[in-house]
Length: 444
Image (tube, rainbow, N blue to C red; front, top):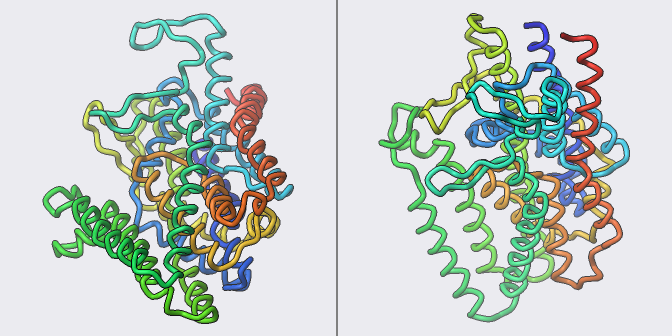
């Protein structure tokens, strides 16, 4: 039990570090454009990081918890993964490199699990609990097909989104920038497009709403408020609100003078940065919830017959058997509080990299980049994919830079960031493996 408590405490410390390491993701553009002072920006971002507690479910947490097969590892594996993730996060923060906290955690968890499998079974095959022959590399959940044709999961999908998340962010921000640029011209065609987009958004979002009869655990007695505040529905309400707000601005953009347009864009940046902070809190805090859930599952498996206190009564969902997940309320509350507290601490070295070194950012670019980043995070969270908020916003900033000209993006800085992204998972995995072997000498 002592080791389990240590893992939970370290996981929350990692969540806190994640907050100040990735604070730049949400506040870099509002600081760079002087919409908010650095102190105001971190307060703003921290508030919406914490507000994500009431918005998002636990899909990403479930994906992270199943990075490795919990029935084949021990608590030392999870401890090694968390320690490695903390070390790599602190190093990249000190160097001002906006690496991915998400991929650090995934790499650490997977690397320690592989080290455990090699230490216990060697490189030859062994007979598992199911009676089949397994190998050391199978301890990690590399790929699992989606249920009923849904989105597949596994580490390979997470690795794929190292490329796909920034590409999605760049593509979305490029399209939003082009949309805004055309809306600034006195032409009827951009307005027709905008109205059509508004109608399409309302129709699509309304069709995706979950009715009261399909809500497992209504939050309120009122049908209306239960539907309105269901996590699935809130996300789609937010998507609609963001798109409709930008659309409303586009309808009046051409009638504004330069000063009025800049003032309106700065106000919109508050909305876009808030939306991105919500996505950051919802995406990144869930990863720590997943680690805590995995640790409890491993503890129960390695201590059969143990009676767990109600505050640690965690159950991982299983789509194959229809088992519903259970997560005590204090775990998400603690995770969202930790990441919000970390964001309040700031991360000014990375703010400088994100806010000025990639490309020059104005309020126009800030709105486009943050809006694109937020929409990308909501989309990937809906698919239960733990993507990097760092990769997403970096790609979004590059996308708006490309609307000016290719040379507007400082590609030397960008290439360095990409190398950091590529190396994060393997370095974290190797570091976690080494930490596991060292810990195994002292912890049986």
